[in-house]
Image (tube, rainbow, N blue to C red; front, side, top):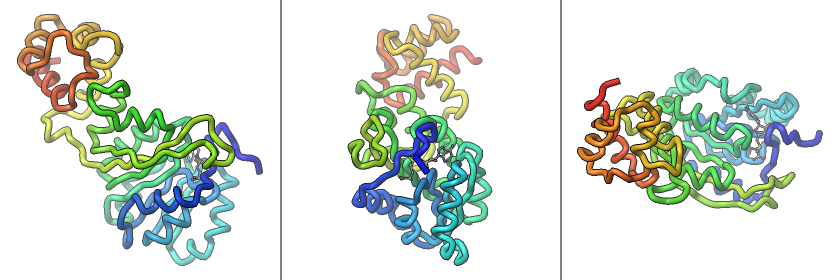
Length: 270
Ligand code: SAM
Protein backbone atom coordinates (compact mmCIF):
# COMPACT_ATOMS: atom_id res chain seq x y z
CA UNK A 1 0.00 0.00 0.00
CA UNK A 2 1.77 3.24 -1.07
CA UNK A 3 1.87 6.08 1.48
CA UNK A 4 -0.84 8.72 0.94
CA UNK A 5 0.83 12.09 0.63
CA UNK A 6 -2.48 13.91 1.01
CA UNK A 7 -2.69 12.45 4.55
CA UNK A 8 0.86 13.61 5.32
CA UNK A 9 2.20 10.06 5.45
CA UNK A 10 5.95 10.36 5.93
CA UNK A 11 6.96 7.50 8.16
CA UNK A 12 9.77 7.92 10.67
CA UNK A 13 12.65 5.47 10.18
CA UNK A 14 15.26 6.87 12.57
CA UNK A 15 15.38 4.52 15.58
CA UNK A 16 17.31 6.96 17.80
CA UNK A 17 14.71 9.67 17.11
CA UNK A 18 11.88 7.26 17.94
CA UNK A 19 13.48 6.44 21.29
CA UNK A 20 14.08 10.14 21.98
CA UNK A 21 10.48 11.12 21.28
CA UNK A 22 9.17 8.45 23.66
CA UNK A 23 11.72 9.39 26.34
CA UNK A 24 10.91 13.11 25.98
CA UNK A 25 7.43 12.50 27.37
CA UNK A 26 9.08 11.68 30.70
CA UNK A 27 7.63 9.18 33.13
CA UNK A 28 4.30 7.93 31.78
CA UNK A 29 4.17 4.67 33.73
CA UNK A 30 0.67 4.15 35.07
CA UNK A 31 -0.74 6.65 32.55
CA UNK A 32 -2.77 6.65 29.37
CA UNK A 33 -0.87 8.29 26.51
CA UNK A 34 -2.53 9.54 23.32
CA UNK A 35 -0.67 9.19 20.02
CA UNK A 36 -1.77 11.33 17.07
CA UNK A 37 -1.29 9.68 13.66
CA UNK A 38 0.46 6.40 14.54
CA UNK A 39 0.78 5.44 10.86
CA UNK A 40 2.69 2.18 10.57
CA UNK A 41 3.42 2.25 14.31
CA UNK A 42 7.00 3.57 14.30
CA UNK A 43 6.61 5.38 17.64
CA UNK A 44 3.66 3.35 18.88
CA UNK A 45 5.69 0.43 20.20
CA UNK A 46 8.17 2.69 22.01
CA UNK A 47 5.32 4.61 23.65
CA UNK A 48 3.48 1.46 24.64
CA UNK A 49 6.43 0.00 26.49
CA UNK A 50 6.56 3.12 28.69
CA UNK A 51 2.84 3.72 29.29
CA UNK A 52 0.07 1.79 31.05
CA UNK A 53 -2.16 2.33 28.03
CA UNK A 54 -1.83 3.89 24.58
CA UNK A 55 -4.75 5.31 22.61
CA UNK A 56 -3.70 5.88 19.00
CA UNK A 57 -5.83 8.05 16.70
CA UNK A 58 -5.42 7.22 13.01
CA UNK A 59 -7.61 8.51 10.19
CA UNK A 60 -6.44 6.07 7.51
CA UNK A 61 -8.64 2.95 7.56
CA UNK A 62 -6.00 0.57 6.19
CA UNK A 63 -3.31 1.75 8.63
CA UNK A 64 -5.74 1.59 11.56
CA UNK A 65 -6.58 -1.99 10.60
CA UNK A 66 -2.92 -2.95 10.29
CA UNK A 67 -2.18 -1.53 13.75
CA UNK A 68 -5.14 -3.41 15.15
CA UNK A 69 -3.69 -6.66 13.79
CA UNK A 70 -0.08 -5.93 14.74
CA UNK A 71 -0.93 -4.99 18.32
CA UNK A 72 -3.87 -7.36 18.86
CA UNK A 73 -2.24 -9.02 21.88
CA UNK A 74 -1.64 -5.62 23.52
CA UNK A 75 -5.22 -4.60 22.69
CA UNK A 76 -6.55 -7.78 24.31
CA UNK A 77 -4.44 -7.05 27.37
CA UNK A 78 -6.01 -3.57 27.59
CA UNK A 79 -2.70 -1.82 26.82
CA UNK A 80 -3.62 -0.48 23.39
CA UNK A 81 -6.58 0.87 21.47
CA UNK A 82 -6.64 2.32 17.99
CA UNK A 83 -9.34 4.87 17.27
CA UNK A 84 -10.04 5.25 13.57
CA UNK A 85 -10.97 8.93 13.49
CA UNK A 86 -9.96 12.42 12.47
CA UNK A 87 -7.96 13.72 15.45
CA UNK A 88 -9.77 17.05 15.05
CA UNK A 89 -12.99 15.24 16.02
CA UNK A 90 -11.48 13.23 18.88
CA UNK A 91 -13.09 13.70 22.30
CA UNK A 92 -10.07 14.40 24.52
CA UNK A 93 -12.28 15.29 27.52
CA UNK A 94 -14.03 11.91 27.44
CA UNK A 95 -10.69 10.10 27.03
CA UNK A 96 -9.18 12.01 29.99
CA UNK A 97 -12.26 11.27 32.10
CA UNK A 98 -11.86 7.58 31.31
CA UNK A 99 -8.12 7.68 32.01
CA UNK A 100 -8.73 9.55 35.26
CA UNK A 101 -5.90 12.02 34.65
CA UNK A 102 -4.60 14.72 32.31
CA UNK A 103 -3.05 12.86 29.42
CA UNK A 104 0.37 13.13 27.79
CA UNK A 105 0.22 13.35 23.98
CA UNK A 106 2.80 12.38 21.36
CA UNK A 107 2.85 12.36 17.60
CA UNK A 108 4.64 12.87 14.34
CA UNK A 109 1.91 15.13 13.03
CA UNK A 110 0.40 15.12 9.55
CA UNK A 111 1.86 18.47 8.46
CA UNK A 112 -1.12 19.52 6.31
CA UNK A 113 -3.19 20.11 9.47
CA UNK A 114 -0.51 21.13 11.98
CA UNK A 115 -2.14 24.43 13.02
CA UNK A 116 -5.65 22.96 13.45
CA UNK A 117 -4.17 20.16 15.58
CA UNK A 118 -2.25 22.64 17.76
CA UNK A 119 -5.43 24.68 18.21
CA UNK A 120 -7.41 21.53 19.02
CA UNK A 121 -4.85 20.61 21.72
CA UNK A 122 -4.94 24.18 23.07
CA UNK A 123 -8.74 24.03 23.24
CA UNK A 124 -8.47 20.75 25.16
CA UNK A 125 -5.70 21.88 27.51
CA UNK A 126 -7.80 20.96 30.56
CA UNK A 127 -7.58 17.29 29.53
CA UNK A 128 -3.88 17.35 28.66
CA UNK A 129 -0.65 17.38 30.60
CA UNK A 130 2.09 17.76 28.00
CA UNK A 131 2.75 17.03 24.34
CA UNK A 132 5.83 15.94 22.40
CA UNK A 133 5.18 16.70 18.74
CA UNK A 134 7.07 16.49 15.48
CA UNK A 135 6.25 19.34 13.10
CA UNK A 136 7.83 21.09 10.15
CA UNK A 137 10.99 22.89 11.38
CA UNK A 138 9.66 26.35 10.46
CA UNK A 139 6.51 25.74 12.49
CA UNK A 140 8.53 24.67 15.55
CA UNK A 141 10.64 27.84 15.12
CA UNK A 142 7.46 29.94 15.22
CA UNK A 143 5.82 28.04 18.07
CA UNK A 144 8.86 28.39 20.34
CA UNK A 145 10.02 31.87 19.21
CA UNK A 146 10.86 34.57 21.72
CA UNK A 147 9.78 38.23 21.46
CA UNK A 148 11.91 40.31 19.11
CA UNK A 149 12.92 37.36 16.94
CA UNK A 150 11.98 36.99 13.27
CA UNK A 151 9.71 34.01 13.93
CA UNK A 152 7.75 35.51 16.83
CA UNK A 153 4.12 36.07 15.93
CA UNK A 154 0.56 35.12 16.61
CA UNK A 155 1.31 31.36 16.60
CA UNK A 156 4.03 31.85 19.26
CA UNK A 157 1.68 33.88 21.46
CA UNK A 158 -1.25 31.53 20.97
CA UNK A 159 0.72 28.36 21.80
CA UNK A 160 2.72 29.93 24.63
CA UNK A 161 -0.45 31.28 26.29
CA UNK A 162 -1.28 27.61 26.91
CA UNK A 163 2.14 26.83 28.36
CA UNK A 164 5.86 26.81 27.61
CA UNK A 165 7.08 25.24 24.37
CA UNK A 166 10.66 24.08 23.89
CA UNK A 167 12.46 22.75 20.81
CA UNK A 168 14.12 19.38 21.39
CA UNK A 169 15.81 18.24 18.14
CA UNK A 170 15.66 18.49 14.36
CA UNK A 171 15.71 15.73 11.74
CA UNK A 172 16.58 15.87 8.04
CA UNK A 173 14.15 14.60 5.36
CA UNK A 174 16.15 11.34 5.05
CA UNK A 175 14.96 10.26 8.51
CA UNK A 176 11.58 9.51 6.91
CA UNK A 177 10.15 7.35 4.18
CA UNK A 178 9.14 8.80 1.84
CA UNK A 179 11.26 11.87 2.70
CA UNK A 180 9.24 15.09 3.09
CA UNK A 181 10.44 18.27 1.39
CA UNK A 182 11.22 19.93 4.72
CA UNK A 183 13.25 19.41 7.88
CA UNK A 184 11.29 18.34 10.94
CA UNK A 185 11.61 19.43 14.56
CA UNK A 186 10.33 17.83 17.74
CA UNK A 187 9.15 20.18 20.46
CA UNK A 188 7.68 19.74 23.92
CA UNK A 189 4.69 21.73 25.12
CA UNK A 190 3.64 21.73 28.76
CA UNK A 191 0.03 22.70 29.26
CA UNK A 192 -0.11 25.46 31.89
CA UNK A 193 -2.44 28.20 30.61
CA UNK A 194 -1.56 31.78 31.51
CA UNK A 195 -4.91 33.54 31.03
CA UNK A 196 -5.90 33.69 34.73
CA UNK A 197 -2.40 34.73 35.83
CA UNK A 198 -2.37 37.59 33.31
CA UNK A 199 -5.98 38.54 34.06
CA UNK A 200 -7.22 38.19 30.48
CA UNK A 201 -10.17 36.35 28.97
CA UNK A 202 -9.06 33.46 26.72
CA UNK A 203 -11.13 34.10 23.59
CA UNK A 204 -11.01 37.91 23.68
CA UNK A 205 -7.26 37.99 24.28
CA UNK A 206 -6.46 35.56 21.46
CA UNK A 207 -8.69 37.61 19.16
CA UNK A 208 -6.76 40.71 20.25
CA UNK A 209 -3.43 38.93 19.57
CA UNK A 210 -4.55 38.10 16.01
CA UNK A 211 -5.44 41.77 15.55
CA UNK A 212 -2.11 42.97 17.02
CA UNK A 213 -0.12 40.80 14.58
CA UNK A 214 -2.48 41.20 11.61
CA UNK A 215 0.11 42.99 9.43
CA UNK A 216 3.71 42.31 10.36
CA UNK A 217 5.07 45.49 8.78
CA UNK A 218 2.66 47.76 10.62
CA UNK A 219 3.15 49.15 14.11
CA UNK A 220 1.04 47.69 16.89
CA UNK A 221 -0.87 51.01 17.06
CA UNK A 222 -1.73 50.85 13.35
CA UNK A 223 -2.87 47.24 13.57
CA UNK A 224 -5.08 48.09 16.55
CA UNK A 225 -6.48 51.09 14.70
CA UNK A 226 -7.29 48.86 11.73
CA UNK A 227 -8.98 46.55 14.24
CA UNK A 228 -11.35 49.31 15.28
CA UNK A 229 -9.78 50.88 18.38
CA UNK A 230 -9.65 54.68 18.62
CA UNK A 231 -6.25 56.44 18.34
CA UNK A 232 -6.52 58.16 21.75
CA UNK A 233 -7.40 54.93 23.51
CA UNK A 234 -4.46 53.18 21.82
CA UNK A 235 -2.04 55.95 22.72
CA UNK A 236 -3.20 55.98 26.34
CA UNK A 237 -3.05 52.17 26.64
CA UNK A 238 0.48 52.00 25.18
CA UNK A 239 1.68 54.81 27.44
CA UNK A 240 0.11 53.23 30.54
CA UNK A 241 1.74 49.87 29.71
CA UNK A 242 5.11 51.57 29.12
CA UNK A 243 5.25 50.63 25.43
CA UNK A 244 6.78 52.95 22.80
CA UNK A 245 4.12 54.45 20.47
CA UNK A 246 5.86 53.03 17.36
CA UNK A 247 6.45 49.53 18.75
CA UNK A 248 5.57 46.48 16.67
CA UNK A 249 3.68 43.58 18.24
CA UNK A 250 6.62 41.26 17.56
CA UNK A 251 8.74 43.22 20.04
CA UNK A 252 6.31 42.69 22.92
CA UNK A 253 6.56 39.90 25.46
CA UNK A 254 3.30 38.12 26.21
CA UNK A 255 3.04 40.00 29.53
CA UNK A 256 3.36 43.35 27.71
CA UNK A 257 0.75 42.39 25.13
CA UNK A 258 -1.59 41.41 27.95
CA UNK A 259 -0.90 44.73 29.70
CA UNK A 260 -1.81 46.69 26.55
CA UNK A 261 -4.93 44.58 26.13
CA UNK A 262 -6.03 45.15 29.75
CA UNK A 263 -5.47 48.93 29.51
CA UNK A 264 -7.27 49.12 26.19
CA UNK A 265 -10.25 47.21 27.59
CA UNK A 266 -10.34 49.68 30.47
CA UNK A 267 -9.98 52.68 28.10
CA UNK A 268 -12.45 51.48 25.53
CA UNK A 269 -14.63 48.62 26.73
CA UNK A 270 -15.85 46.49 23.82
N1 SAM B 1 3.63 8.20 13.50
C1 SAM B 1 3.97 7.65 12.22
C2 SAM B 1 5.46 7.75 12.01
O1 SAM B 1 6.09 8.59 12.70
O2 SAM B 1 5.99 7.05 11.17
C3 SAM B 1 3.22 8.34 11.07
C4 SAM B 1 3.38 9.83 10.99
S1 SAM B 1 2.74 10.54 9.51
C5 SAM B 1 3.71 12.01 9.45
C6 SAM B 1 1.15 11.21 9.98
C7 SAM B 1 0.06 10.17 10.26
O3 SAM B 1 -1.15 10.86 10.57
C8 SAM B 1 -0.28 9.28 9.06
O4 SAM B 1 -0.35 7.94 9.50
C9 SAM B 1 -1.66 9.75 8.60
O5 SAM B 1 -2.45 8.75 8.02
C10 SAM B 1 -2.25 10.25 9.91
N2 SAM B 1 -3.29 11.27 9.73
C11 SAM B 1 -3.45 12.15 8.72
N3 SAM B 1 -4.48 12.96 8.94
C12 SAM B 1 -5.01 12.59 10.16
C13 SAM B 1 -6.11 13.05 10.93
N4 SAM B 1 -6.85 14.08 10.51
N5 SAM B 1 -6.38 12.43 12.09
C14 SAM B 1 -5.61 11.39 12.51
N6 SAM B 1 -4.55 10.91 11.82
C15 SAM B 1 -4.25 11.51 10.66
